[in-house]
Image (cartoon, helix red, strand yellow):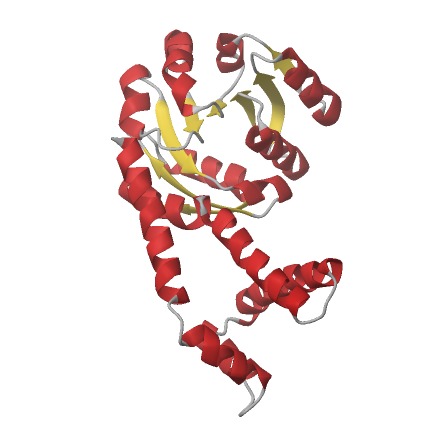
Length: 263
């Protein structure tokens, strides 16, 4: 077991701390933040150590998770530079590339993660890339930490823009699709409450079926579609529209914007 420190205590950090605690991956966790109110919430709800001193977090930890906004990243890196040598530093800041962090923390082992908001319920879909000096043991530590909150894939850094476009931004795109199906249910005579519950359970159940059965999306479509039945009638509208092309363009545009921001 190892000591883990968090710099930043926002929602994503809060969720990761909670997941790490439940998985019993750390013998101690300490969190720093500029907000005393936020730190008090972390201490009261999660029972971990708190401080407003970033350097103390680094000194007391084997693994440091940078959960700060990109615009304050350079300030934080300059603050901890003198005490980060040899430490495993994991950044979950969107768009902040390995090269930028390594330029400040020259002797640290740096990992960059692109998480997503379902981390808040233990269903994160993440990708991560590693910098210079990160070894197999370090990668296993990262996989355990991220795996406590969902799924994480070890990738080359240039693939993280695709992760950002798909799973990083994806919850917003899925939420819009859910809105459309709920509205369709309402206009078909259901109450908003019933339409919402049915839609959410349908998304959840469909994902679970695909994961657990191993069938393809095409196989599932065919399974649900009876000749001349209701699904086929609905598919005639859906598949004659450009919805698939729009979704592809949506993910590609989000990924392209991630590359733009990284520059």
